[in-house]
Amino acid sequence: TNYTNTQLKTMNDLITITPAPEVTDEYKKEAKTWTKWDSKNKKSFPYNYTTEERILILAGSATITPSDGGDPLTIEAGDAVTFHKGFKCRWKITKRMKKHYGMFASDEDEDADEPPAITCDVCGEGCFEESYFVKEDESDICPKCYVKDEKKYALAEHQKNGEAVIEKNPPKKKQKKG
Image (cartoon, rainbow, N blue to C red; front, side, top):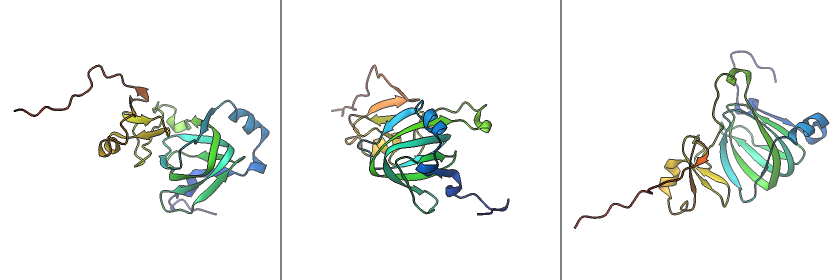
């Protein structure tokens, strides 16, 4: 597709998929040094890429639906995918996925020292500063979504900047005067 400078980029311009047969041995070797992720119980979640992320899918498959209404994309075992900064989507795991992933700051981000991305798995908003981590399905919940359903997330770990918060005096329920 040829684009002119006046055309806006779509979400599909912010994702690059290299099919399994075209992934180089060099890429596979580098990917082994990245963090390993297993979808386990995760089935569907929104994600907002605040920095470039590269992945190599070891097993499984997923459908990635861009948030701007672009066509859904299927990724599967052996594929290498680059999610460029600004890409927003909904993941739907179609077969339990295992992957290596690495985060890469672009040249323009080098001076920014951005914190790692934590995105709410309910609403898709960034919540690095404060979140709740649900170990059971490895989901991150922002404070707004947590408050909407505190019972559901009762066992979630309260985090600030990606680290567990140890509360010395947990908030007490207000007692009725009487």
